[in-house]
Image 1 (cartoon, rainbow, N blue to C red):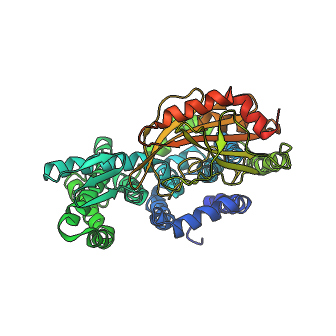
Image 2 (cartoon, one colour):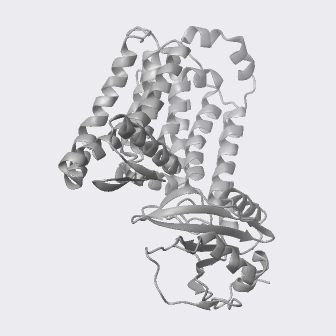
Image 3 (cartoon, rainbow, N blue to C red):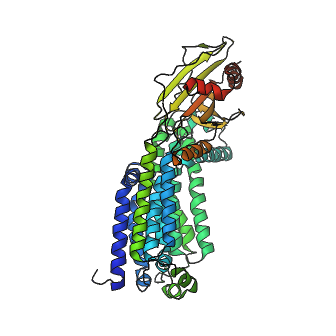
Amino acid sequence: MARMPGHWRAPLARLAIVWLALIALFLGEWRDMAWQWWDSSTYNHILLIPPILGWLALQRAAETTPLVPRAWWPGLVLTSAAVFLWVLGDFSGLNLARQLAVVVMLQGAALALLGPRVAAAQLFPLGYMLTLVPFGDELIPFLQTITAKLTMALLAVTQVPATIDGVFITTRFGYFEVAEACSGVKFLIAMIAYGALVSNVCFASWWRRAGFMALSLVVPVLANGVRAWGTIYIARSRGIAFAASFDHIFYGWVFFAVVMALVMAAGWRFFDRKVDAPLVDGAAIAASPLLGRLERQSLPVPAVLAALAAMALAGPAWSAAANRIAAPMPELIALPQVPGWQLAQDAPRAEWHPLHAGADHRLIGRYTDGKGHVVDLSFALYAAQGDGKEAGGFGQGALPLESHWAWEEPGPVFAGAKSDVIQAPGPVHRLAVTWLRTSNLITGSNTRLKLANMEDRLLLRARPTMTLILSAEAADGSPPEAAIRSFLAATGPIAPWMDRMAQVR
């Protein structure tokens, strides 16, 4: 502090206090993120991001300290947008939105308290703060599919006969699944953060930065395909148990380190920033007419601090008001009678347990019509939507995360529903058709449901939410689509039937 220029001491102290206050006010999100950094191998690399951010800021200190920090009201716009995003994330139960919002709040506060010139000098460290947000689980199904296709291509090249069914690969010496843990998402997310850092620090040309980032995105996906192929290829001669052990040890600890080194080696000869070159042009920032015009949009510091405090408190207050609202629930709901169908007690060939976390009521049953058609029903009723109560949340419904079921392909079209074919080892194929309902909306889209739920909570309206899943196994002589359509013909229109089951109409 003694060596710090006098015009920087008060602004930095204010920023530190505001950041600490925002972290304390939204401690739940920061605690959840920190736990993911520590506990999930997908996000362990984020533990390195805070010291990297400090290092990046210090690398630009010589060019930044001559600039004069100024309170800047447009920074409040970014902060208010972040608070509103947090409210929407809280209302929809979307952790990613809430966690992104609390990081953007820090960025907005820095912009509001330090001004556009300082933000321009520290633009990359401020932007790199986004890597604190744990994201990527949403990519798992897509990456599983890509890895499976790459594996099949490599098996064909190496003349290993195999067939593929979704993410399941069958060979004469074993049956393999490209599971969620084998999707490659861990390496891809880490490489995105690593690639962005190297692109900024080691390159001056934007074209070279773009090229290195493309390399950092494509190589991990291709390498994961090689990893999956290698596991199967080794299993052909050494057995599945040895291949699995080899995969965890060699590929887990060595393979991706080698791939990362190869990516760096490929980019090394194209590095065009000199070791002692400054990372930003402080003189150009100080002399910029555009930044000078932007800087005129200033406010007194007390006004900016008061606005930051008001916005930060408004989000939790709005959330607290909405969380007190819940639709009335019946004491008991029961499986309905369906004309021509009876409840059955036999078990499916592969256990199937849809996930409806936080539901106030849940029904599950199996129906048969005595003509070879068997339909499994799963129904959930929610008084409200929120954290831990997400009818359309990621990993909810017919295909829970970390189950022995995997997505195979889209199913046949059913009106107002999401249709999926899923598969369990065996293989066992199952068609699952999902309807989501709230108020007058019936849809298969998680996005449309979340938008409707957010609107209700923003307007403080109490409305129940429902999930209905009808599912049938594929069996000889009994197509699952025919069984579900026959069941729907007996229930009548699905929306009022769901309402009667939930006793809300």
